Length: 136
Image 1 (cartoon, rainbow, N blue to C red):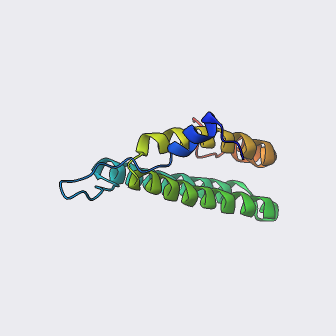
Image 2 (cartoon, rainbow, N blue to C red; image 1 turned 90 degrees about the vertical axis):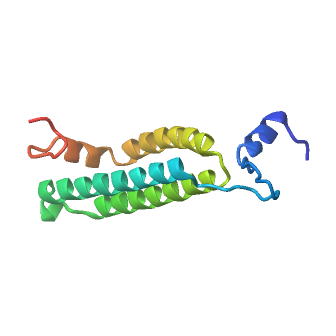
């Protein structure tokens, strides 16, 4: 199987980038800045999920509360867990900036796919009269 230069460079993104201490043991992360970032990300995920669920609960009548919203919520929670785990692993191998860049690109793709799949749900949540996210 021929290996290309681009596949080798992509694989190198996930190799251990940690320094070694005086005893020759790798000094692994996550360090202070990674933990701070992970905690801030976790707080943001909790707040945004809570606001989304609150907005949906207050705006979508019970008869309109359908399986699509439940699927949407489960996918968002699973995505948040995957993002947290991925970023933790990238911090652990001392490559937080690589992980952050990958997450930016993956987040853009994820949001675009989600807006395509759940367009009517987005419209219903964002165009309601008492929307939490709307300027009043």
